Length: 92
Image (cartoon, rainbow, N blue to C red; front, side):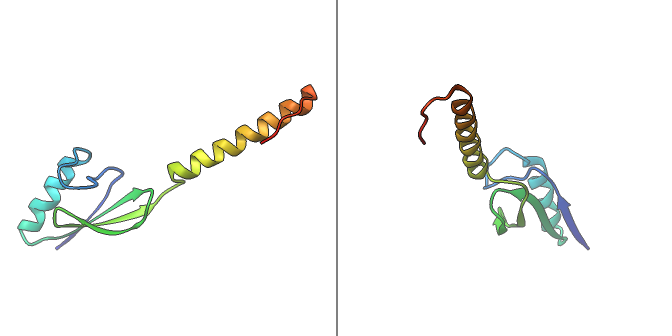
């Protein structure tokens, strides 16, 4: 038998409380000889093993770095637009 968990929340490392119940279930199933794999979103993608459980982290959406970079650019654009409206001299 094979089990795949598709979840939005799974421990990043041993002892991580997020998704701990699912981690416990996955390990218990593996001890009974059931093949288990977890698929969960993350800022970075790739296969990892957490407490003996194979986890595929898939990129879902933008990373926090990309969000912050986008906010900085949007803030610059707003400042430039306001400067044009107010005829101010604004530099990056």
